[in-house]
Image (tube, rainbow, N blue to C red):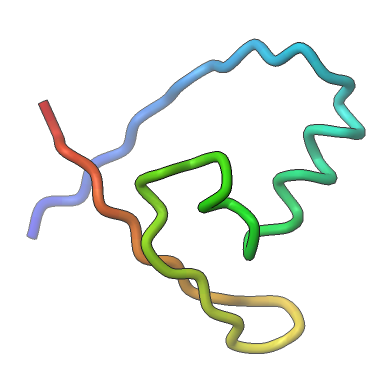
Length: 56
């Protein structure tokens, strides 16, 4: 399997603190990111996520 990286810049109408707060709550990602299929907790510091997205 080939590895790849991508870079994206998003400008959001929110403070950095609010953005961090939302990003820190991975279990709620699917409420605003429809490609998120599953989020699981492994332990206090790690987890897993399944994402399904078309690559164009």
